[in-house]
Image (tube, rainbow, N blue to C red):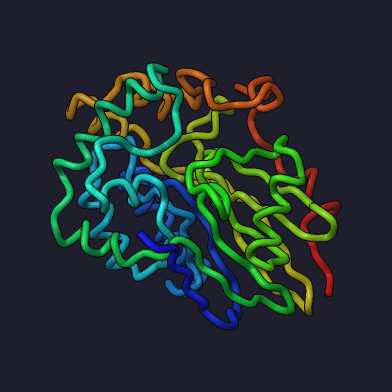
Length: 287
């Protein structure tokens, strides 16, 4: 599939950024309510990919996403499903626990998705770009060059700089790694809103998204957590014989394993995120 980039032009008003719905209908329903409460238009709600994933309601999740009319790029899962691939393309190590679990949830998702939903996913771009204030913003899943690349807060700046340079962007909104974070790189930003389909390995059932605001020429970003009916999502996974380890993660907030994590992020397991301490130092990029 040739790389497809959609340029949205200028965006105004508050924006809601999120990733990794992972077929978690209950989380998506809760986030859609947030957008209504905040008065954020659907065209200002953007997903960083992987609408489909570990949880039990892939078809229902796609239908709600389409009804909402939010925007999304392709995640590696959507790309693999559209191409009829046999695996999720998550770049897990072969034979690892994550790889073995994917052999359960990925075929399940394939079996539940309609042709209509697959056709809709095929229309999604690899990247979205837009202007926000005076800044050029681009949306990627893993990185510009590799949709399945795991990029974390501890990932070296030069790796993040490659995508910023290739997309000629001031700000990148990224997905895939499952953890919320922000990095400042030579006055440019790499922002990962986290995912709403699974907790962030911090010992809570909360999931994460991000709000962007252009306030008097400054771009402010805020990490926000989302509470939702995780008990229902977990029960539905169990009823459909999806990996019990992931059903437990929805409740406990602890990942079954940390195979994909760098050492720095591994040490943060079970520590609840608190982004309030970062706001003054990092939240604003001025013209």
